[in-house]
Image (cartoon, rainbow, N blue to C red; front, top):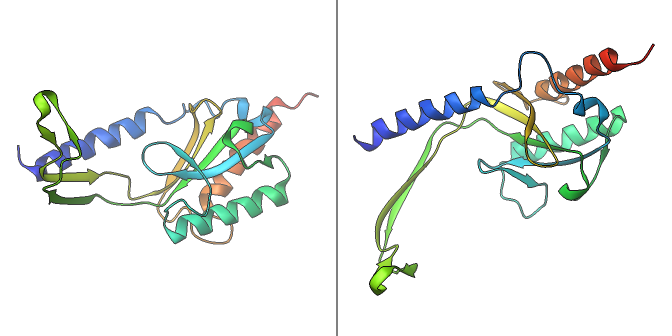
Length: 180
Protein backbone atom coordinates (compact mmCIF):
# COMPACT_ATOMS: atom_id res chain seq x y z
CA UNK A 1 0.00 0.00 0.00
CA UNK A 2 1.44 3.38 -0.99
CA UNK A 3 1.89 6.35 1.35
CA UNK A 4 -1.13 8.15 -0.16
CA UNK A 5 -3.43 5.19 0.48
CA UNK A 6 -2.08 4.82 4.04
CA UNK A 7 -2.90 8.48 4.72
CA UNK A 8 -6.45 7.99 3.40
CA UNK A 9 -6.96 4.84 5.50
CA UNK A 10 -5.49 6.51 8.57
CA UNK A 11 -7.67 9.57 7.95
CA UNK A 12 -10.79 7.42 7.79
CA UNK A 13 -9.78 5.71 11.04
CA UNK A 14 -9.19 9.11 12.65
CA UNK A 15 -12.66 10.32 11.62
CA UNK A 16 -14.17 7.14 13.07
CA UNK A 17 -12.27 7.67 16.31
CA UNK A 18 -13.43 11.29 16.56
CA UNK A 19 -17.04 10.22 16.09
CA UNK A 20 -16.74 7.40 18.62
CA UNK A 21 -15.34 9.62 21.36
CA UNK A 22 -17.94 12.38 21.02
CA UNK A 23 -20.31 12.75 23.97
CA UNK A 24 -23.62 10.94 23.70
CA UNK A 25 -26.71 12.55 22.23
CA UNK A 26 -28.28 12.43 25.72
CA UNK A 27 -26.42 15.63 26.47
CA UNK A 28 -23.44 16.75 28.48
CA UNK A 29 -22.68 15.13 31.82
CA UNK A 30 -23.57 16.75 35.13
CA UNK A 31 -19.89 17.53 35.71
CA UNK A 32 -20.28 20.58 33.46
CA UNK A 33 -22.84 22.01 35.89
CA UNK A 34 -21.01 20.91 39.04
CA UNK A 35 -17.48 22.00 38.09
CA UNK A 36 -16.06 25.24 39.43
CA UNK A 37 -12.43 25.43 38.25
CA UNK A 38 -11.17 25.22 34.66
CA UNK A 39 -7.76 25.25 33.03
CA UNK A 40 -7.34 26.49 29.47
CA UNK A 41 -5.06 25.03 26.86
CA UNK A 42 -4.66 23.42 23.49
CA UNK A 43 -5.18 20.04 21.89
CA UNK A 44 -1.98 19.45 19.97
CA UNK A 45 -3.14 16.07 18.73
CA UNK A 46 -1.65 14.11 21.59
CA UNK A 47 -3.64 15.45 24.52
CA UNK A 48 -4.25 18.60 26.53
CA UNK A 49 -1.42 21.13 26.89
CA UNK A 50 -1.89 23.99 29.37
CA UNK A 51 -1.80 27.50 27.92
CA UNK A 52 1.65 29.02 28.12
CA UNK A 53 3.65 31.49 26.01
CA UNK A 54 6.15 28.70 25.29
CA UNK A 55 3.54 26.41 23.66
CA UNK A 56 3.91 26.41 19.87
CA UNK A 57 0.38 26.95 18.51
CA UNK A 58 -1.24 28.82 15.66
CA UNK A 59 -1.93 32.52 16.31
CA UNK A 60 -5.63 31.84 15.68
CA UNK A 61 -5.64 29.26 18.49
CA UNK A 62 -4.03 31.68 20.93
CA UNK A 63 -6.53 34.41 19.97
CA UNK A 64 -9.49 32.02 20.32
CA UNK A 65 -8.31 30.95 23.77
CA UNK A 66 -7.99 34.60 24.83
CA UNK A 67 -11.56 35.23 23.67
CA UNK A 68 -12.81 32.17 25.52
CA UNK A 69 -10.99 33.38 28.64
CA UNK A 70 -12.76 36.75 28.31
CA UNK A 71 -16.07 34.91 27.92
CA UNK A 72 -15.38 32.84 31.03
CA UNK A 73 -14.49 35.94 33.05
CA UNK A 74 -17.67 37.75 31.95
CA UNK A 75 -19.87 34.68 32.56
CA UNK A 76 -18.61 33.97 36.09
CA UNK A 77 -19.67 30.29 35.99
CA UNK A 78 -16.12 28.95 36.24
CA UNK A 79 -12.88 30.19 37.76
CA UNK A 80 -9.82 29.89 35.49
CA UNK A 81 -6.80 28.32 37.19
CA UNK A 82 -3.25 28.22 35.90
CA UNK A 83 -2.45 24.59 36.70
CA UNK A 84 -4.30 21.64 35.20
CA UNK A 85 -4.00 19.80 38.53
CA UNK A 86 -6.16 22.47 40.20
CA UNK A 87 -8.97 22.21 37.61
CA UNK A 88 -12.21 20.24 37.50
CA UNK A 89 -12.36 20.73 33.72
CA UNK A 90 -9.72 21.19 31.02
CA UNK A 91 -10.87 23.25 28.03
CA UNK A 92 -8.78 22.81 24.88
CA UNK A 93 -9.01 24.51 21.49
CA UNK A 94 -7.71 23.30 18.15
CA UNK A 95 -7.86 25.13 14.84
CA UNK A 96 -8.98 22.93 11.96
CA UNK A 97 -6.22 21.44 9.86
CA UNK A 98 -6.01 19.12 6.94
CA UNK A 99 -3.36 16.47 6.60
CA UNK A 100 0.19 17.66 7.08
CA UNK A 101 2.97 15.41 5.87
CA UNK A 102 6.68 15.75 6.50
CA UNK A 103 9.80 13.73 6.06
CA UNK A 104 13.50 13.80 5.67
CA UNK A 105 16.61 11.84 6.36
CA UNK A 106 19.37 11.53 8.89
CA UNK A 107 22.83 10.01 9.05
CA UNK A 108 23.10 10.52 12.80
CA UNK A 109 21.85 7.69 15.01
CA UNK A 110 19.35 8.71 17.66
CA UNK A 111 20.08 5.62 19.80
CA UNK A 112 21.50 2.13 19.64
CA UNK A 113 19.34 -0.95 19.19
CA UNK A 114 19.99 -4.61 19.91
CA UNK A 115 23.51 -5.61 18.96
CA UNK A 116 24.64 -1.96 19.05
CA UNK A 117 23.14 -1.16 15.64
CA UNK A 118 22.09 2.50 15.26
CA UNK A 119 18.42 3.41 15.29
CA UNK A 120 17.14 6.52 13.56
CA UNK A 121 19.52 6.48 10.59
CA UNK A 122 17.99 6.83 7.15
CA UNK A 123 14.81 8.25 5.70
CA UNK A 124 11.68 8.95 7.69
CA UNK A 125 8.21 10.20 7.00
CA UNK A 126 5.42 11.39 9.24
CA UNK A 127 1.88 12.60 8.95
CA UNK A 128 -0.53 14.42 11.17
CA UNK A 129 -4.22 13.91 10.54
CA UNK A 130 -6.91 16.14 11.90
CA UNK A 131 -10.32 17.45 11.16
CA UNK A 132 -10.59 20.50 8.92
CA UNK A 133 -13.14 21.85 11.44
CA UNK A 134 -12.25 23.96 14.46
CA UNK A 135 -12.74 22.20 17.76
CA UNK A 136 -13.25 22.83 21.46
CA UNK A 137 -12.83 19.83 23.73
CA UNK A 138 -13.61 19.68 27.42
CA UNK A 139 -11.97 16.99 29.53
CA UNK A 140 -12.42 16.06 33.16
CA UNK A 141 -9.39 16.35 35.45
CA UNK A 142 -8.41 12.76 34.57
CA UNK A 143 -8.36 13.44 30.83
CA UNK A 144 -11.67 11.80 29.87
CA UNK A 145 -13.61 13.63 27.17
CA UNK A 146 -16.71 15.34 28.59
CA UNK A 147 -17.82 17.53 25.67
CA UNK A 148 -16.66 18.25 22.13
CA UNK A 149 -17.85 20.78 19.60
CA UNK A 150 -16.64 20.92 16.00
CA UNK A 151 -17.54 23.21 13.13
CA UNK A 152 -15.95 25.17 10.29
CA UNK A 153 -14.67 28.54 11.54
CA UNK A 154 -15.91 27.66 15.01
CA UNK A 155 -13.10 29.60 16.71
CA UNK A 156 -13.51 32.79 14.65
CA UNK A 157 -15.01 36.03 15.89
CA UNK A 158 -15.27 37.91 19.17
CA UNK A 159 -17.52 35.27 20.75
CA UNK A 160 -16.37 32.14 18.94
CA UNK A 161 -19.39 30.05 17.83
CA UNK A 162 -18.02 26.91 19.47
CA UNK A 163 -17.66 28.78 22.77
CA UNK A 164 -21.26 29.93 22.49
CA UNK A 165 -22.35 26.33 21.78
CA UNK A 166 -20.53 25.09 24.87
CA UNK A 167 -21.98 27.85 27.02
CA UNK A 168 -25.51 27.10 25.74
CA UNK A 169 -25.09 23.40 26.60
CA UNK A 170 -23.99 24.25 30.14
CA UNK A 171 -26.88 26.71 30.58
CA UNK A 172 -29.37 24.03 29.44
CA UNK A 173 -27.83 21.59 31.88
CA UNK A 174 -28.00 24.17 34.67
CA UNK A 175 -31.76 24.59 34.02
CA UNK A 176 -32.34 20.83 34.08
CA UNK A 177 -30.43 20.33 37.32
CA UNK A 178 -31.82 23.42 39.11
CA UNK A 179 -33.87 22.50 42.13
CA UNK A 180 -37.39 24.03 42.35
